[in-house]
Image 1 (cartoon, rainbow, N blue to C red):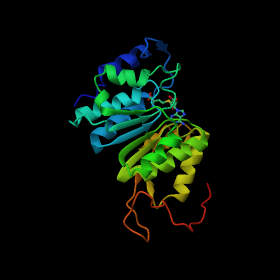
Image 2 (image 1 turned 120 degrees about the vertical axis):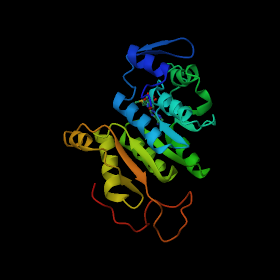
Image 3 (image 1 turned 90 degrees about the horizontal axis):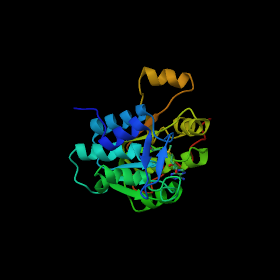
Length: 239
Ligand SMILES: C[S@@+](CC[C@H](N)C(=O)[O-])C[C@H]1O[C@@H](n2cnc3c(N)ncnc32)[C@H](O)[C@@H]1O
């Protein structure tokens, strides 16, 4: 199976430029996910065949193009099964370049674009009992935002679903990962990403951290939309 990206993404990466809906040109697309992350998303889509996916942080659409093109490759019917959240999409810094790229790639039928802050969209998704199989957290990198994104994502994942946090060695993101590792082991387990990633972690250069949602193992089954991630009297683990 070819590991090529769709032509719109291939061109965007090769030229490091893209275009917004009103024709505005963008160069130096530093906010794009790394090639390694894009390959990771592609491989995870192929290996795990998620039905519904979510990303926080659409920007110019690099990762969204991978999600949507892989849904198409998996033979999924167009059903807006990839949700992408980004409040700044309609404003000049992006000029809807992300959703426009997905449209130019002929993949808009797979995209549910929410131009809002994730901290307001995610609780609504939980409350309306939405579930996802694969979530990519790449929005605001401030501690409080990453924490909120990861907290709600853990609620939104189906059992066995994966969530991946970008920029894991960033101190804000690293703090969230420390909390998850030491306090939420009943709800999520970290997926080892191999020796290369472990070494990068030791060097403070770890890009991705991935967790799998565990089935609910508490005193009040079944797991419903409002089941807490851990027991109310859990001790606070050091992080
Ligand atoms: C690193 S970029 C995302 C890159 C994208 N995943 C890609 O591969 O092209 C981060 C994005 O997060 C968005 N963002 C910032 N604060 C946010 C928030 N509170 N909720 C959702 N997105 C946010 C920014 O507008 C920016 O486009």
